[in-house]
Image (cartoon, rainbow, N blue to C red; front, top):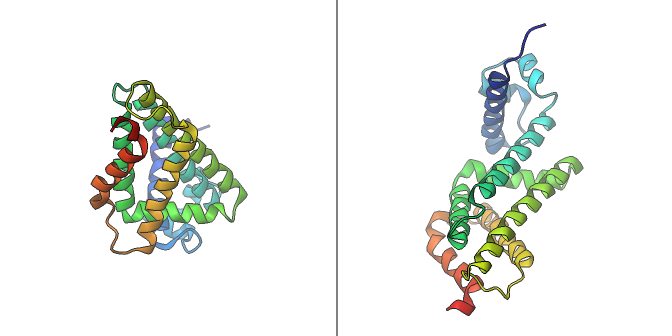
Amino acid sequence: MRTIDPDKHAARRDAILAAARHCFARKGFHQTSTAAICAQAGMSPGNLFHYFPSKQAIIAAIVDQEGSETAAYFAGVQGSADAYGALLDFMDVVLALAADADFAGLALDIAAEAMRDTDIAARVARNDASLRGGLQALLEEAAAGGQVDAALDAAQTASWIAALIDGIFNRVAVDPDYAPLAQRASLHLLLARFLRPALA
């Protein structure tokens, strides 16, 4: 039996996901064929199916990958000396991702797929809970450090910020003149007035 090199296997798997992201961002999940993904990844269909049994499995893996990246980000800033600054930094990352046409298109396609597929919906819900949990932890740390209004309910506030993030991506979809990165100062001001009024 051939021994599988886990590092090479993981690298090849990531390459397939990157190729799929590229294809999905341009044509959407249902308009993209596995043949197109294979061509982008530079491999045969048989080789691709060795890593993923179906296109739906690739979509699920992309959703899981995004969730893992978000969780890793928040784990990396947990216990920050400047929790409010870490929150603003995260929102800057959101703006940069929204400015990436491929990422923004894929994010909206995932949201649409969650309305049709219960498995994807469960994965998206798990990612959303992780996002809100990460935001809540930062808010609680910021409140403990006197950086945000401690009277705010951290869980509800995290949900409102998550809704704001969703709105940024939806705005990109409906307004071709909307430039996310140009909104940084306004976004920071909005958050400051929402989170820090008692400190003003």
